[in-house]
Image (cartoon, rainbow, N blue to C red; front, side):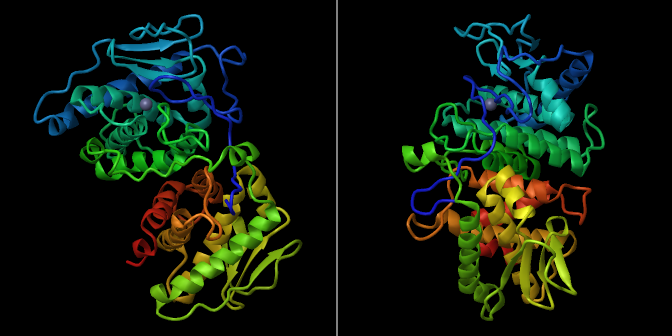
Length: 443
Ligand SMILES: [Zn+2]
């Protein structure tokens, strides 16, 4: 969150690497720079995942490509597949020598795909599941498709998100049951894949114009989901002026250097006041009645009495229907979200509670999958205002805040945990509110 010039820099430190690639994992996932040790020997099982995944991506493009190419047949990569390790580095790519990097890449010169079979891919598989490893190589294959279609004349961040979108189009084919490499993909696996993309984002504060920019997690997940929902034709139409890139730089070097979230107590107070103000202005559009002030009760011990709690975040935050107030655990839950994710995780907690109250007050459901997704869209509509507000007009988002929102939604619940709505769907519904505002949530 930014008030005036304060920014927040949260999350993992990532190692951005050169070339058109994914980025190595964070210190949290234990992956490493070259030379830090801890790498595992490549095992046969990785080959069993990646090679069938690449074959399956080729099966997909053999079918899908002619619709994008005016009927021309798809040609698989001429230079083949190159798993590599520290002791067996990748081939040279053009004038780039073949050096080990914890990475995966497509090389246009040699028309080949290479990946780190020692550290990156095993770690992604171990931490986030095989589908993420499949998505990573489908992304690289997406660059081969770009080359074939002559789509290279776009900023890097657009090309990267187009490759994510192409990977999503392949994922849709997997979800439709047409893949031999990945069968019976569950909502839990999809959520885990999204959690992995969060680790592969750009470092907060990266400019979208940076020649290495791949996108923040919010945008990369949008691109993947575009591919899943709308297919390869939508991806092929990606241009700088047709996709909503939300990646922003810090407003000044001091802001970037401080990298601080608002202090916890201030974040709670300012965010609650802002949400109150937002709903007092916009609730009449939603419900054709005025908003009455919603009491916010942070509690430090036992929760305030409530006979009809509409709970979220594992029960330690709720909207109380009979008392018409919201409450949350201010001793453990709030500080834990703040420390693990950042100030906008607190924003997501409060935003969700206010949205829950708004939805309930207007007599609409908050339970089950549809109710939860409606709440997430309304919560996103508040974020839309924070995102589009002029600087100096109160709280605004700072770099990293939208990725914190994604991380918070993943923390609030994955598929299989509880109410039926997985993080994959919740992020999509929240994003509708963020990108389109309240109108997206009124259907
Ligand atoms: Zn790429």
